[in-house]
Length: 145
Image (cartoon, rainbow, N blue to C red):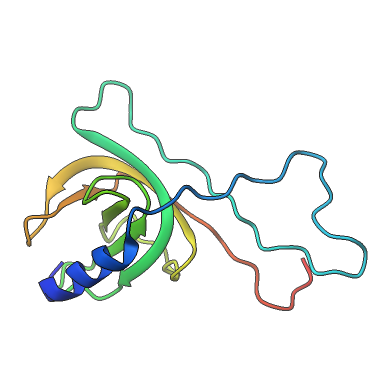
């Protein structure tokens, strides 16, 4: 990440200790009463490290910040998640290379799950170089579903 180290420090300070994402509703539970809009999907497929992968980490958390345009021009994106303990307690930075980058990047508050080897970033932070990535797909507001 080529952003100011002050931005990273501010995000880390705001993140605090993070929290676990909410559990999905029990199977068969009614999501909404008739006439009410169903709540947004709050689950995401969990990314996992391959068996025997060395120095691999898997995290799931809510997006705090997305760097959509990487200053070094290689086309990757970076996410800062409130979840996991890779970069600091409760915070994980994910490096998503161009080939794995989704067309629509997740937005702040959405769930992301990533797994991959842990490397040192350009500011000395520990971050996951994603080999597997899943993100929550929110339904448009007012869709009723």
